[in-house]
Image (cartoon, rainbow over all chains, first blue to last red; front, side):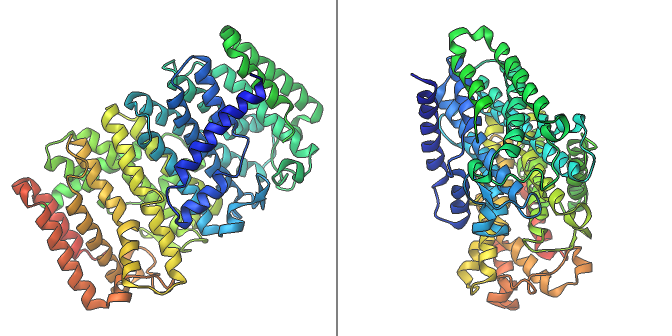
Length: 286
Length: 286
């Protein structure tokens, strides 16, 4: 099976499960949640959960449950990030942003609803495994919380009105994007019954590489190509490109990717998909 | 020990634990979270968790953990509810609202952070009990989610632009306030190792009585007395008073309180605090 076929196999399962999870009500909040959750993102975080679990021959049904939860959290963060009081973006995943369609108040609630649903889903959906499930809640919400992703968003706001230093950019990226990507590796490891930190080095370097690629794409691509507003420069965002320059950013991207690959050497053949995934993230065009 | 002494004993423990839980960082998001979480609310929901658990001779350390989590969720809902795109309130718990002090973007993140922290806290804080903890996450987040409290907030927005019927008001109150009060009873029962639904009738009737009292206070008291903006009429909110009239609202308040009391008759002397609590909620002036 090629990398693309395997990636599609994962995303098909993820999309089917997400649709089932969010289409349990026809109320407006659920419709607004479904609008963003089922808008067809790349599903990188949930794919990582599945792939990390499979590389360790773990419980793939449990991995699918955790994979859905992390995508719910990622999607809520996009909805809130796009709100007028945050980045005020109008385009996301190739469609009008949530608040553009449902209004600010309802978009706020849809975001709250998706963050909340991640906890409901891990604790309430099949299959159940109390020990692994509570560990999954702990690691996922530590990654997405105020010392993780939310803290990174706060740093991001801070950076808009302060000088962007290299230290600040690395700190923002380590938390704003990195924390949830590290959590993806943790969830995969937990589903496999392994130590939660098993994929730590892989995910730390891959998370940084992922964000550097995002920053490069923001200056090199059009909004149409990206499917979202490329608003970093407009919003005076601190990015890798703005503090290191384009060439150095590209060098760091290669370097971080190489370190991610090194970290999974011990997996041998079972790590092939994770290697291809790093390569895909390095070269992606949106 | 009098009711007031016992209530203070509970709130002292809750406030100490909440302070410890949120003062783990000096970052702005944690400071904004602490600003609202430690603003000295009545702590009704966490007190109910503690009291329900104690009435069943349950594990009070576990109850304290769940009590803190429910107050985090209640506080996040207040921060988001007060935002300009929602009720646009300036006064809460006798102080300027979160966004008035920290700005809209940071208040949004503080709310997200507290909702997130509730999951982190149940799964990460001592004491640990995987089976009970995952059940607590499930019941708490079902109550606070898009079919519970968040759904009630969406109904509330809907009601501002639609005719307020008795059915709509009952539905809003059942979810917007009721769902989290039912969750308080569930958390107390879970901490005690009892069936999660043990206090269902008590909490359903008490939750409704609580909200009716709130609606009455909103028309009979000043903002200074309430410590929050009494903005229901200004915002064209659907309330018990607006659809039933003041006298009928007062009659229903008595009736719902009586039904709550009936439901805990079987507890005998062990139910005394819960009886006094119902009485206190019926007569409270803020």
